[in-house]
Structure formats: structure tokens, C-alpha cells
Amino acid sequence: MDSTPSQVNIVTGEANPNPDNLTAGTRSPIFITNDSLRSILSHSSLIQHFHTTLPALSATLHTPIRQSHSISPSSSLLLMPSWSSSPSLPYIGVKLVTHFPQNSMLNLPGIHASYVLFSSVTGQTLASMDGTVLTLYRTSCVSGLASKFLAREDSKVLVMIGAGALAPYLIKAHLAVKPSLEKVIIWNRTMKKADELVEKLREECRGVSFESNDNLEEIVGLGDIVSCATNADTPLVKGEKLKLGAHLDLVGSFKETMRECDDEAIKRGKVYVDNEAALVEAGEIVGALDRGVIEKKDVGYLAELINGDAAGRRNSEEITVFKSVGSAVVDMLAAQLVYELYMKKVSTERDV
Image 1 (cartoon, rainbow, N blue to C red):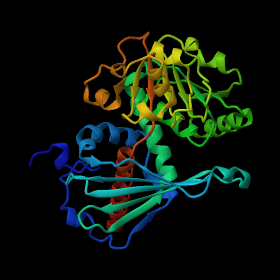
Image 2 (cartoon, rainbow, N blue to C red; image 1 turned 180 degrees about the horizontal axis):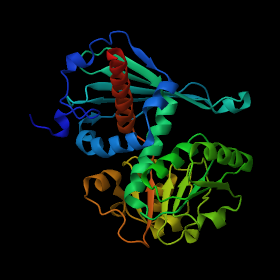
Image 3 (cartoon, rainbow, N blue to C red; image 1 turned 90 degrees about the horizontal axis):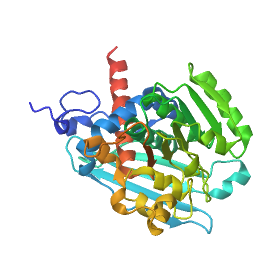
Image 4 (cartoon, rainbow, N blue to C red; image 1 turned 135 degrees about the vertical axis):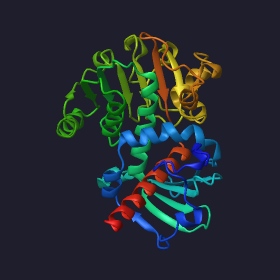
């Protein structure tokens, strides 16, 4: 039997089951708890899954522009659907996201999300899971995958700008692909949060030094990898401060008014993005294009790195920049991996 990716189960490496059998025994939708999700998913496994499947399956995934509906002047509902036309990926998925920024006054998160997975063969609901945790994993692992190609192999220092929910996931994703990393320095506008994250990660990530530092301009220049996950609307990273050979990872901005780095950082670096939406959504990229700092032809894509169509890092002194805005494609592939690993685990436990 031909063992191309489209004929093989992506998780097990075995021949794909008949799609009708794939859903057998799951007539009642399952709910995958956060504890279960974290127990079966790792940054290494999801990064490898993206590396393997994005080239083979991304072209078979259909992802309409996300829908956004205003619920009130300050709150909104977003729908992010995706479905596959490949027999080896028999799924339909929808991420549902609510944005209630006023929740901060209630000491609640401003964003909540759920992900629902359906069979594209029968249309039946297969599973649902927390879309917030899934997004944290997929976002960080996309950055980790880019870092695999763009950061120096001998990277020693990771600077994490921002200490919010995404920060520990990003740190672990970069550590997963760059085992040479020895030190992580964390900065946050509220340094108490940076200090708390340092203490948490010291317990979870042995063998790596963690520290906080409130001098942002100083620590940016120390980073072999500088990762940003903030809501900044004025640049935090000054390009002139980046050391030669640095890799800059930008995750926070998702609209034109937001910027985590200045034009100099974009000008000095070779820029890659996760998908074309970054050219119209990410403030750093949109602004640099509008001001003529770079042209569209100067921007590379993650898929090109994976496929070998782009060289990635070309030498030890080159500065690289990666900007991600997210997509329903990686949501679907992340949900697929979680679901198939969960079903494999259930099957194994049943046979014991």
C-alpha cells in the first residue's frame, strides 16, 4: 500500500482506518477535559505534528474568513470554522470565541473559547474541548516550529516579553526545539507577574535558569531568541537593541494599531509570517509595508520553511523575525491530534 501522508494515520503511522470506522463507538460526543488534554499533548509532539502535516494537508483544509459579531459595544463573538476535503483528515471543526474585555473588573479572563470537532463523513459531533487551552498550545507550537528553522542552533538565552497566559507555553515551545537554551529572562509591565512566572517555571522546567528583569532595553540585547506576547500598541522591542544572530518571535498583535517592535527590527531582520493574514492584521507588518520599510516580496512564509522552499537562517549573524496571527488550519490540526491521541488512549486502556 502506498504510504504517503495522505494514506497513513498521522498519529500512529499505520494505514488509515475506514472513515466510517473512525467514528464507530463515538455516537455520543466526548468532552476532553483540560487535564486530559494536557496529559496527552506536549509541545514536542504538537510541533512535530505541525512539521509533518502542514505541508501534506494544509492545502486540503478549507478555512473561511472568521466571523465576528458584536454582542454589545464592548463584547463580541467570533466563529472560526474549518473542514477537510482529504479522506485522511475526516473532520469539520469550529472554534467559538467570546471576547468580553470588561471581565477584568470581575477578575475573570476576557477571552473564552470552545472547540467542537465533527465527522466530515457523517456530520456527527465527535468531541469538544477547551478552545482557550488548545489555542495556547497551537499558538506557542507554531512559534516553536518557526524557531526550529530560524533561531541559532547554539541559542543560549531566551527573553520573554510578557508574562500572561501565553508566556509559559511559548517558553516551553522554544525550549522544546532549542535544548541549547540555558537561561530565560522574563519582563512584564507588572513585574510581580514576571516574578510569579519565574517561580512557577523553576518548579516545572529543571535544568534551565529563570530570572525576571525590569530593564527591557538591556535584556532585549541579551536574547538569542526574543519572544513577545503582549497587547502593546507602542513598540517594546527596538530593532537597534537586537544582537546579531537574534531571532525575534512576535505573537501579540492581531490588529493594525498594535505593535510589539519598531520598523528598525523589521528592517534589520529577514521576516517570515505564519500566513497571509499577517500582512493585513499585524500592526508591525502592515505599518512596515505602508511606510515602505519592506515590500511583500521580502516576506517569507512558514510553509516555505517546512517545504524547504526557503533557506531559513542563512548564517550565524542574520537577524530573523517571525510574526504569527493564527489560523483555523492549525486549530484543526491541533484538535485532530488531541482527539486521535485521546481515542488511542481510551482504546488502549479498554484493551488492558
